[in-house]
Image 1 (cartoon, chains in turn brown, purple):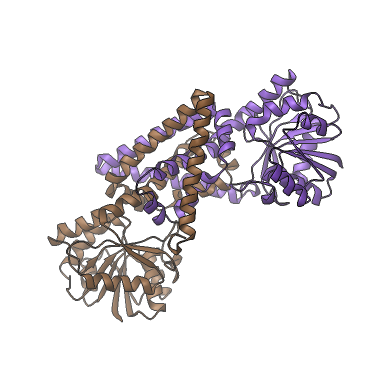
Image 2: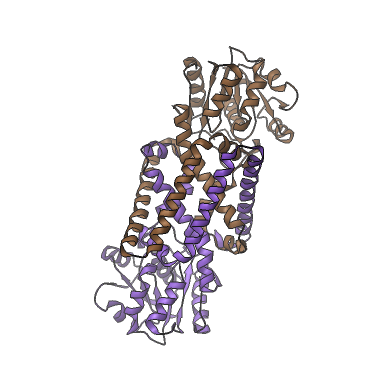
Length: 302
Length: 302
């Protein structure tokens, strides 16, 4: 049993981990840190945490993480360098550290730059959960039920620490898999980061048009679903884009090429280009069907 | 009351109109035409239509539309020129004709090219409903409940015919509005056609990657929603793209520019470009919020 769980960043992700851990009896006490005093007050009022402290308070992170046998870093990915620095002086060999950032390469690099090498008891992780909602009031005990969690240990990571973090997530109902950090960042650039940028870009472009009100008025369910991820937290997505730009930028350029390809098929108006356009759309539909078949045969992607 | 409703194309859209019209007692008998004999057999078996005929049968459309006081053209938009030609010899001044095509300019131009001018009793229409499902078994009586229907009459259209079609859709629970055909095509290029092309292009690009299986395996709910429209009917979207290319192509090129803009903000890695990236995402999120606010204050877009 975890004696003192320290959750740094009590938002949807960290808050749900705290709630689930408590409801499953996985920990004795929970202490939370957050940059937002209102969110912290709500986390306390909701009983998600037993003690709550302002992250910006001088040395707060280090002080509170002392004595914690489990530390979950659930701050925005852009804050990880600062968080490791704050944790450095109080870093304990007897504590398990893990994070929840959607990019792993740069988080691991941040740990390496602070500690000289990636600490053996830090297990980088990424739960594939959460959505546009944010803040502790959106947290729920079953957020991770049947969701995937990816752990990306490196050569220096202690296998016992990996097993401990894996056990924690499994207890929360998640399906855990291991992946190379760089490979993780490549896969998620394609499956998550690129679609987010596309959705933001589309809504931004349409939102600048004179007829935007009319465009939005006649937009139906397809548009609503397509743009749902454009309601995501802008700070988090700025961080992700800046930290994983190396993987995302080539995909954006690839998408530009795809759009040109489709455009030229539409422009040509020959029987052959009409046929190629049909083939293109049919192949895309079939690819999505492969995705759906994979999802339905697999509890992790729902 | 409609005596004999002729539905050309008994798929999701035409089939739902037939089912709803019958269940509301708006018509006495319904005759359906379709290119797919299996679909036709199902439409008969399900009681959606009273008589069913193969569209490809020589002169079938013309023969069946004779005696119909209402004709709904619910064929794919690319077939409208052929449909008007088939209907020409049996065209009756006492009949109301309407269609359901997602693009209006080229459908109207097709009518004009066949009849010399757009017939006064043809009311071009576009119900904003339907999804990835297709075929008569997906048809339902409430498909149009609280959905928008846009009618795009032209100068020659008889206002009484417009009122009749408006009354029909209103009886089916839809919210009817009128729009200029070209303006309709511009608005829907932005709100519907562009997102469809983006979804197809994204899935096509990812589906060609070596690691596609892994990409799809780790894709979550965001990806599923974002790409839902890539499961749409490829034939219909080929038609729409070819018929409305004039409006869609500039938007695709605009999207290409947006992606370059975001890319360069990600590349620069200056404090200013980080700030601009945040502003860009925040503005997009706010634009989507305007869309959501509009949808929720408005029965038509759900």
